[in-house]
Image (cartoon, rainbow over all chains, first blue to last red; front, side):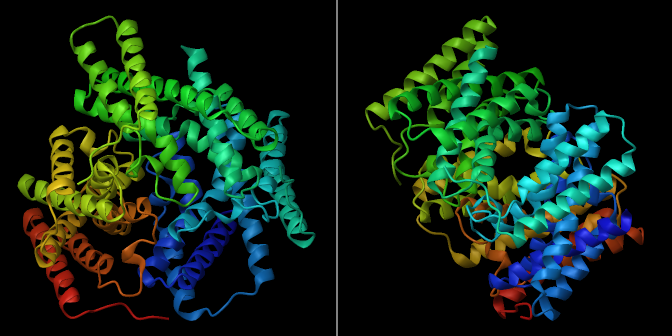
Length: 196
Length: 196
Length: 196
């Protein structure tokens, strides 16, 4: 579990740093965007729920990982295989979504809020990255291939599983797996949401 | 009171969703902007004051209302009568401002902070909406017709009334009414603030 | 100490208000940007650490100072001597960074987090100002002359001093001085960070 968290954080940090370089930022920008992408979703969740100090303040190892990989990929990484990136990012999306819902249920808040917080944790890192890069967040645009939607469906499943008293580990891995597969299928078959 | 809160939330959600469609967003964007517009001001107030979990996390009905009306107006609403919208929005502005000041006074914080929090609650939903749509917030621009200013004047009045031990309900309705009338008068007569 | 805090807040408020005028905002925009610039860094620090209500809510004097100087400079100040501004801003950068680290260490959080919070307190006011003005934050761009970097180096020094049990006042002034001098030297000699 911890290992996967680190993988997800590192993947987000790399994505943030490469995005920063595309926008002609220096290393300060790159590290900041790396942090925002890796920790943004969980930070907003923690603030809304009142779980402070926020999670990464309590685990400096995460901070160091985001810093080091953000800086390294800014200076050393020319480009990332797009497929590899999509896969790692989809792992992160699934895991973060399930984590967000888990924390919310632990506070005995409503299942609806748990689903919302799962989606926020999964997707708001990328939203913050895009805001810092001064553009409309990618996942809000017409051609998005089921990003928040995959997170939403998987998190709904997860909350349902927990209400049915399913084993927590089983519920987590199944739901994260559903999100992972949905997202990859959406990318592969260019599935998007209907326009008005 | 509860009914008016719902009206204000629904009005903001509709405004957010329509704005999202104008910016070529998909339904994920529309629902997110609807949430940001409806809950943004109160969320920032709650975070600054340390009232967590924030208000809408504790009332899932509000979340559902914003979700449903955001999605519906994205898909089904072609356009809204501008006058109707301005009126409903002005009701929301007045109510949210008074609510923000009330919560702050309950925490026994200074009247100055109460006025500030009233204005923040009233106007920051629209500010967040504009940030997500990647433009300078409308209410900061030269041609704004007394939006934050109406909220400011009405909230000052409200705090004064409470200091003078006026009945809370009377103080609330009077102040929200002043904000409502000021805002509509400003729109009608194109009243703006002086330039430097 | 209190006097220097006020100087830093006033300097940031003036910078924010002038920036707002450049972007054709009205006085509402100017005062909001003044607040964001003056209080943004400390507010984000307080939220992440869970120190709520945030600092300026507890000291209305700061709010009044930001309001008055923001409004005055919007209407009355044509331009500010660039040198004077850089000097006052560098004082603020040093002081805010040290304050941010101090508060974090008081909560017995890790030194790494203390350094991060120092930098956040020092630089995020300007980042928020730039986001509200709808552009990529200045301090993230290639030609930035060691802004966050000065804060980072000085805050690292400060945390080291405190770990070595140096007197707090001595550690604070030395570190803030280092940040001040580094920043001015960087501006003078156009020192920037290496590109990829």
